[in-house]
Length: 306
Image 1 (cartoon, one colour):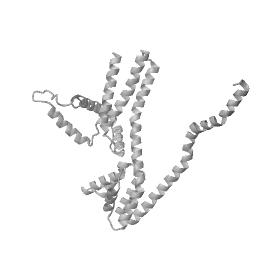
Image 2 (cartoon, one colour):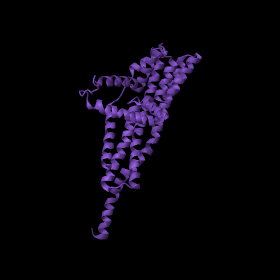
Image 3 (cartoon, one colour):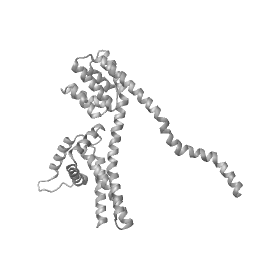
Image 4 (cartoon, helix red, strand yellow):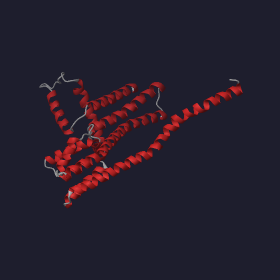
């Protein structure tokens, strides 16, 4: 009975994982509408299910969505909102519902596999085995969070690296006579990466009638990059106070270049410390073997006649 329950749990977790990895929804609202339309067309006039639809669409997908809704209903609203915010900062690799599904699937999968191994090897589950199962379940729950944190950090790093050159281009374009919107559009057109994508989105919002300060403020919130937020605040304040935008951009560009130089100097100072660990673990033991190896052999021959 227990083995069957473990097998069922592992199958459900693996199915959740595969479903979450295969489906990368673009917009939750549009996906809900499409799913509703699909479910309306599945049933025939007599209430029978159309068997021409794949098994994954008929059974697995609705089941996984039910599990996801259950997990979301259990989670606090603040935790779910935090996941949504961090996924936006990571570039929307998936929506929050899919992430919660994968999060639950990893926890169940890790704990289910370890529980099955413990029962197959020992036959019984004691306190120590239960602690090990809970520990691996906790690891399974933590892994998706670490992955999400890495995605956010990697995207923010790309934005920070692209900012000095982008600000130089904006400053040059504005001083050459272009408006700020046109200068931002030129940066989005001539560059690539997360910063260009976010600028393009902000420009589309402004083209649809949204205020520039609101669109730029949301841009800083979506990325979570401190340098970009400072630049946007300076632009918004200059616009509100009626200051010339050119000198403000020049000052911000100089500050960005200074921050880039400081980051390079910091990385250069940290390099010797980071090199210490591979030196101690890998290079020094090899040196000791090469240097002391012949002496050890000679001492062994002299003392033990080797």
